[in-house]
Image 1 (cartoon, rainbow, N blue to C red):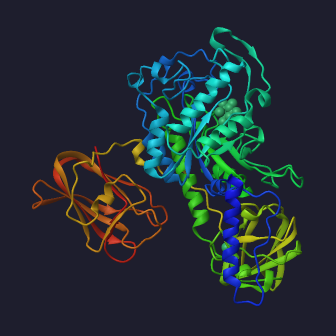
Image 2 (image 1 turned 90 degrees about the horizontal axis):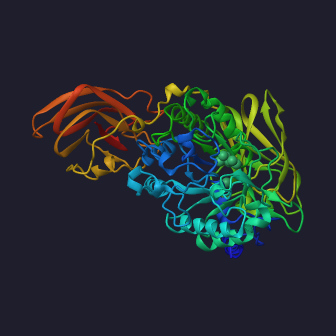
Image 3 (image 1 turned 30 degrees about the vertical axis):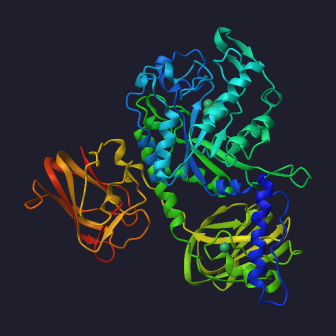
Length: 622
Ligand code: FUL
Ligand code: CA
């Protein structure tokens, strides 16, 4: 069913292709797909690049990485669980979603399942009414992050594990998770299967043969029927994505998204690299703050996973409060900023380009398509050209770069086997990268040193079929940022006043307190006046600049005033928001002492570009 949908899409591309070149003498259609192609779901998934893994459950309270299965549910008592803090931080770091360990090997279910008694309703937390899965899925929806779930097949608690009875339990768990919690973008099965465990008191070793015991083809069918768009991880290559092969967050290079390559059984299965931000483990452990990976190490992980054509799932565990560790968050934010800087400027964007040849000599497949900033359009030579064809890009002025990003139009299959990059420097072509192999969704090639030039050439040395190159970008590897310079989002440590009663007579002002970082309020005037609806006590304010890279009316100097009647005003703070152009993170301003007021006004005394004032979010600190 999915395949047939794909054919319709490819058909649509072909129709567009014909329409575009109809002015020519002959009609040039897109090249035929090469080997196995990804489903739309797999393409969309690859474009997510990276997302969070959240390990949080019984182990958080026992200090173990793998619970035995005999843990008392009463151990699970988060003192201050807050899904919003974690999800906001993921969003701020630039992650596209998160996957939560709804059940780990210990068998304790973190949602009120009907499949087993060993679940969250038996915990005193929220009087047995807690549901971690529901809270995460709800908050992810609010912040526009995709939500996925990890459900360990191995269950060291269940008495029937290893027998047919458990398979019914497992199936029921899948059904519940894929029915009651909105769209699930990915479901994770774990490879660790069988061994010793509690097993309802049997306390023995149970070995299973993963493949035949679970009957993965059946499970895959069930998942597809419940949520056709859900990406299936693992399941012994019956799914859509497979493990990257290490828990250190890298995949091997060359990186093919294909299994049984070059055979009639060829199948598209992408790779996902997994690792945890903290060396202490997948779950939170006491005193782990000193073991966090540095932002520079995370950058390296990113280059060796996403930068090789895979996706990255990066674990950020929750601690006993039910919130990420502050040290993990600081490193995550700093890395998020490094990644933003890496991707912020593509020196090749809009550059002119020529090629050794162009398919059908039509504009649609011309070299210019690699610098148009559009992932879907691509350069392509004639069908029988699979070796030694090239594209040259010419910049308006010389630029210095040390990362080259290439992309293939993967909807037509993964093709490139070997490539080489040269730069025109001091009057001659010099090789700057001669060991490139696969490209796939994207490859980020970190050069041994920065290159300054206005002319760069990509030669496809060998490909499985005529190459289809959709992007050719020149980037700059970011300098390391220290975690202290990119503080964790304040939400982790601060709580804000409720905005429920706030009003303003300024148009659309509510966008500045709707809790959504992606919406913002902007005005040609210089101030935002808010009626808090009642007298409130607060100790400062928090300003989040617009998150869309537009510096127009972005407030960088302010004055903050309060009033009891909306007529007589008193200044309580003024100053600047440092470095918000490069790093538009939350700005917290605390007053010398807390104040009481019914009205506040936030006055922009200067903006980065143009006049006026804007705010993605404005909050008052309790
Ligand atoms: C492994 C598990 O055994 C670990 O505990 C962790 O959940 C990791 C993501 O996958 O196979
Ligand atoms: Ca393009």
